[in-house]
Length: 86
Image 1 (cartoon, rainbow, N blue to C red):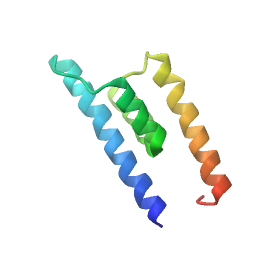
Image 2 (cartoon, one colour):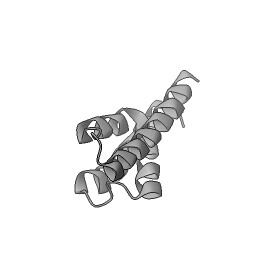
Image 3 (cartoon, rainbow, N blue to C red):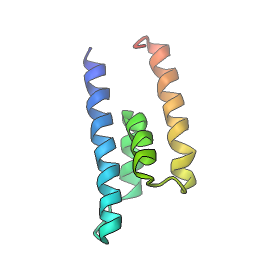
Image 4 (tube, one colour):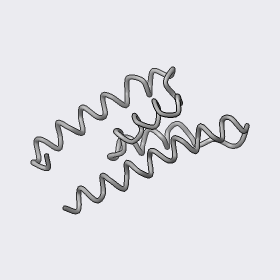
């Protein structure tokens, strides 16, 4: 149960931070580091990152995100299946 709460919270946070980075990009403000965005995806927020990328058309041209986020989702799904949370 706790893992589900963690994953839901991580994906919500990640979704909104990607959206915030897009907003900052449009306004010419200080941006969220790509390493931070990728780390959030890596530690459980990959589905939220992917949803935000395509919702806001943000980071969709960068290969690290376009390829990396789906790979992270696949790894997270396989890991979740292996440890029995799905």
